[in-house]
Structure formats: structure tokens, C-alpha cells
Image (cartoon, rainbow, N blue to C red; front, side):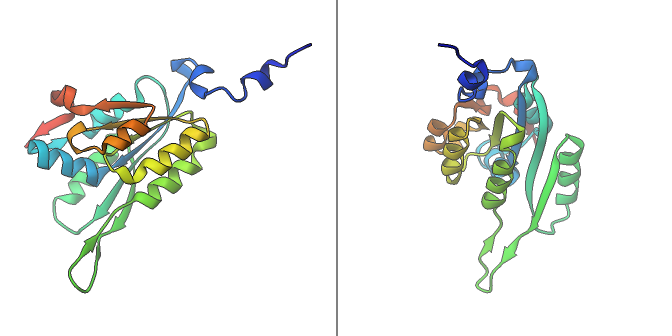
Amino acid sequence: MSYNIASLTANLPKLFTSSKKTQTVAVFVDAQNMYHSARNLYKAKVNFKELLKFSVAGRNLVKANAYVVKSDVPEEQGFFEALEHAGYYLKMKDLQVFPGGMKKGDWDVGIAIDAISMIPKTEIMVFATGDGDFIPLLEYLKHQGVTVEIVAFRRSTSSKLIQSADRFYDLEENADRFLLKK
């Protein structure tokens, strides 16, 4: 009986078929989630440049998206420019304000669509978010053979999201690297 190596390895997780130097990675940053976590927990700002460097970790970066919501406050333009300077492609949408005053501005569906579209192009996807709404997305990506990593602050991250990821990195463990004091 003969075996075709390609067919034997076709269904192996991508993690086992590549070395770290050749692994491809895409990074998806839920900027609002990370911003509010750092502000509320630590009275600090996220060092998004270090976050990207850590997330890539010597692998081949395919795409780094930062998802932001425009709310027309003066300081946000500087924030957006800093994200671009750090190496992110910005995805923007306007804050929705409803007649009763309720506000909404999340990117959950947009992040999910972008991640699914990247399946053929990357082996590893890193999500910087603590939002448990992404659990079904993580499960789908893993089922497609993608390795999924979460980088976030444990205290503001859904425990089920942590369990759903292949790897979780608690940014709080190295807060001096990932937080900028105001």
C-alpha cells in the first residue's frame, strides 16, 4: 500500500505543517474594546505598536486591521493616525446615534467577515479583544484549520472566549510593555 504525503498532511492543523518563520498571521484589533479595557482597568492607553509586534511574533504578517468607530471628538484623529503609523490598516465606521439617545458602534460582523475572507491567506489569526461575541467565529475558524490566538487583558476578557482560543496571551502579565500611562 502506498501513501501520498500531500493527502496525509492535507487535514493536519496548519500549526504542524509550518515552521514559525514561514507561518502567516493576520491581526484583528477591536480598538474600542482594547481602548476601554485599558482606560477602565488601568487608567492608561494601549501601546498598539507593541501589541502588533507581539502579535506577529516573528511570523509573516499578511494583514493587520484596526477597527475603529468615529465619534467626532477632537483627539480621535491623532489616535487614528497613531494606529496607521504603528502599521495597522484602519477600518472605520461612524458612531450610530438613535433617536432615544442610545449609541452603538461595534465592528463584530465586520471583523467576522474580514477574518473569514482571510482563511485561504493565513494560518494564524490573532484577535485583540475580550468580547465573547466572537466565540462562534473562533470555533468556525478553528474548524477550518486556522490557529486562533487572543491577546487581551484577562480581567476584561470573556472566560469562554479564552477557552475557545488555541492560545490566550494576557497583556496584563507584561503591562509595562502594553500600556502607556496617561
